Image 1 (cartoon, rainbow, N blue to C red):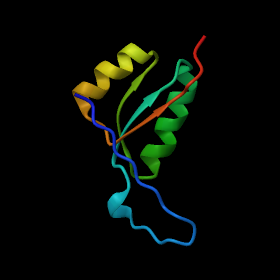
Image 2 (image 1 turned 30 degrees about the horizontal axis):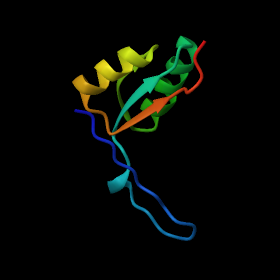
Image 3 (image 1 turned 180 degrees about the horizontal axis):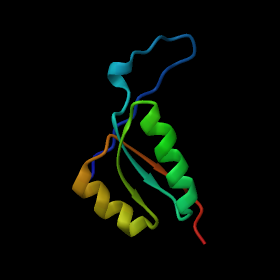
Image 4 (image 1 turned 180 degrees about the vertical axis):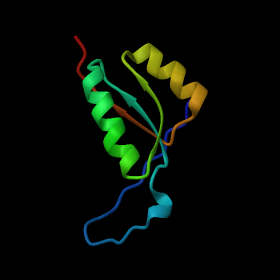
Length: 77
């Protein structure tokens, strides 16, 4: 089962890092994109639990790693 959570910060509302996702899954068919995103996000203190190039592999990884957030490209060839 894959669960989905969302957090919304209204304009002018304060937020804390306690609600920020810690485990991320990156999905893009361009490896250079996931490579750079992983570098940037890791340097910012996030844990990238996996990268995938297809929707099917993303679903399999999401079930296995249970990320807090999935960053996914929505346009595929």
